[in-house]
Image (cartoon, rainbow, N blue to C red):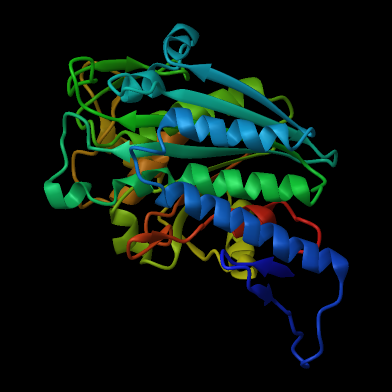
Length: 353
């Protein structure tokens, strides 16, 4: 691999095997270059300043990538289109921002016998909405789109490597802002799943947009085998699994083992959270199907957040589900890590990776 820095200096990167000999396998070298590009893309998007990286600018970045990849198709729902089409949560979270919320749908058909949907939380900036964060807690919230960025980088790296699977990438983009049209505590949102959610915390917005995303995937993608949602979802994830390991929830043991193995293989480490669907009792509402934030924050709340998303999978869906909360490993201090790209490539069995 060769590169040049901004001053024109050449940089050579050489990979060595365990015995000290050079790696000369072209497929492996291509995979290394592709994953590096994907990580750089994901980290650059997350680290971009929020006045620059709006939902509109994020979409422009995606459009540019699609224009360079004829194997990828792109569909977008923007602003009022979301409300008219039933995506009540994604619309509500982003409707107060200057740039409108968007649902970006990417599709790649590499053949094979597995269809996977990647659903990413893309909150380009999170003020907390009307449940406003503190001045210290708000700093760094440009990183709240780490899930969408990691999946986007992984998706396009996988396309470049010609993975032999059908892959959908669904990006739920919004800015959780404040203003006269902001959604409120006590609002009741009509979700794409058909369920209703009573808002009791406007700062628990990530699970809302992802709920619409996974509902879209499981309602509209034929022959879907696995849904993977990824998000910087909860601070509680850092308490549960730390800063280096994402916390995962999986609908069955095989999916959980697959994710663990892929994490070890890729270096995007992950570790299982408590899987206990009865935790949905924490979201009981007197006026809707559920609330969006837990009653007891000391009762496995990072697992609760994942189960909230799971509850919006379509009832007809029989495939697997994997939730990845990467609030910890998505950042290293004040910089993004590009977490998720490697995990996606490993889950997709990318050639040479």
